[in-house]
Image 1: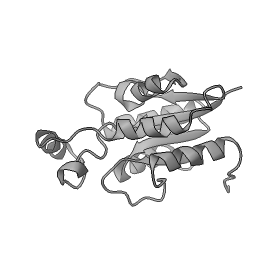
Image 2: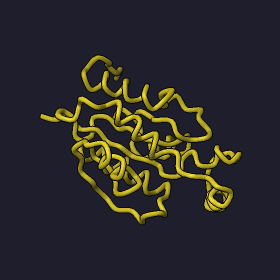
Image 3: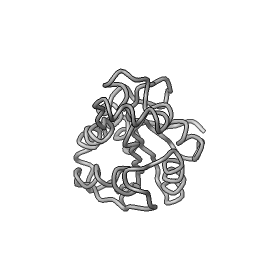
Image 4: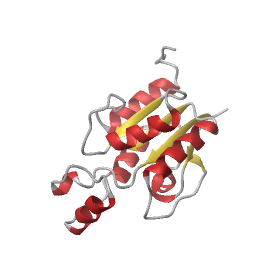
Length: 171
């Protein structure tokens, strides 16, 4: 039987950093970031982490949200996955992230991976608290939360170790 993991991608996380802004929090800042040349960072970071999970395809099934919130990256990776929920493409919100986390946890994910920054981490915590193990793949500008691995590759290595039972969590 395959293990279940969740993947949530915040498609705008990290965009502000490359153009000298302190994140992409809020519609005005995001619009400014795009106008001065910001491009998405989180999709490629998600793919880097998924690439490091290669070899688990036969034992791992992902639960994710549509399009840019995880489906696109999982389609590239070759992992078996189920898309749940709905979004407005190109206009995802913090509420979408919270709904995704709740729905993925309710669908039985044993581990929830997310790609984003501290704002995304807050959204995930608001939605699921400590009900499911959560691991952040860093993509944001403001990275202060202890939920993040130091790189996408390190996040994948931790996920593999957890899913193999090599890392135990305290209750």
